[in-house]
Image (cartoon, rainbow, N blue to C red; front, side):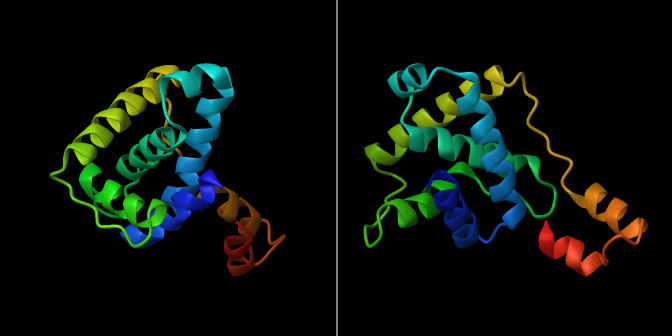
Length: 141
């Protein structure tokens, strides 16, 4: 469910689907490093989702990355359909603080190893050996 929600947020924000894939990788690397009880006592799972999405968003170089308030606005639309997001509300400011705190926890736990070179090398390797046509390899990835 977490990755599906991240994918919906990415689509809503107009970011590349690679950002969602990267965010899911960061998310699962982080939650698999820690005891689930520890994560749940320190953070809401959605705060971790948004922190990893924000990190992936900043790490990608395809398009200009989105600011945290923009990511939260799109997340609010997905998490609470039909509700109005007020970026100036105390609720929004608290949410920003929680996500930034979660971001620091993720970065520290992963020792800032959050950059993903992508899958282009796989596509090039497969297409280069003529084992599979490049469009098929891209579609498969």
